[in-house]
Length: 162
Image 1 (cartoon, rainbow, N blue to C red):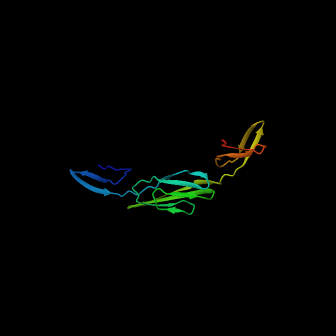
Image 2: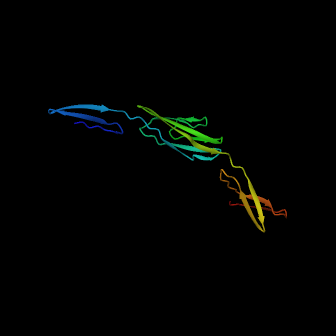
Image 3: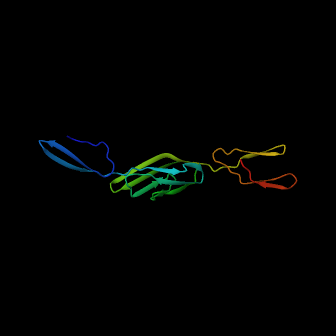
């Protein structure tokens, strides 16, 4: 009688017993688990400069990490941070290592960096109502305040919500 295991996780001792004429033979099998690289990042897209925090989600008890962020920066920290200054898409690679070996995960085009926002808006004056229309397609634009002349030389200042 034989028992086989299709998937075993962790360090296990597997005994295979063969029964024949009331005799039992045992064989001890050991195996070592390799690490499996996995990670997430936040945010994965945004305007330049984009600060991205990476989180290691690897299994198999890794004890060393080697990151390549695609922007010329590398790290050996478990949970690093990097900044992307140039617009484009970036491939991120993580290699994890434990006493039994290593494993690499590459995510192609994982990070997307957009151009910094440019201020492009129109101020429409309809009767006594001012309406501001902005056209910044790739990144959110938050206007803190607007300052304008009312025609009489007085300046009107205040927050503007788009």
